[in-house]
Length: 269
Image (cartoon, rainbow, N blue to C red):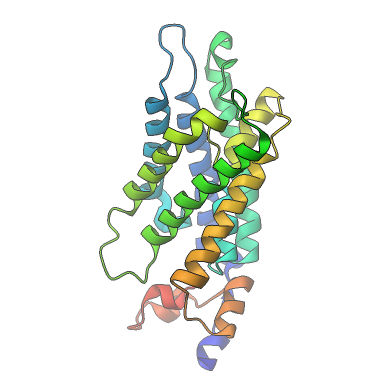
């Protein structure tokens, strides 16, 4: 362990880190563009709850399959924070991911707005409380739905599982769709602060309950992280390993490529 520790380098200075950050931005732009575009109310057709739910779920499934092996395809500050709480990503990765996710959400929403006729673009699906739902009720819904999705994410992507993870992207996509089938009626179903933030910035309209779409998803995701990573299926890591993850220290690829150990045990971040 001591020899390996001496060989670790800061992930921030690696090409892999740069690729991950770029992919996170691109994936978020695509996610917001496709999913948000599916919510627009065109004169000839108004989207159903099922259509919107499938759009969000299938988009996430596609992006996880496309970029998951590079960046993890978080596309959601709540997910990145949950991975940090679960001691699976570094502080520097968390900061970069959240910033790029918010910028990607603004860019994605901006593209949708620019390419859509004005009469239609005004029907942007901004997250807000519906009917007589109170902020407290909305917060509860967001926490529960985000918790369920985050538990699925942790379970589906856990590299320690001995069974096949080939369907992890589809599993995560279906979890997102499931949450939307319920949550749309209450809050429009955020689950993702970036998804709420980007369209609000472009439209210049922030709901008085906008805080719900930050606090709810982040709280639900963190609760899931604590439950999965520390109570239900804890990682057996030494304090040295945990500190290395938080600091973003990794073993260079040239050092572990020809070793028999599993990649996930060598490149912790």
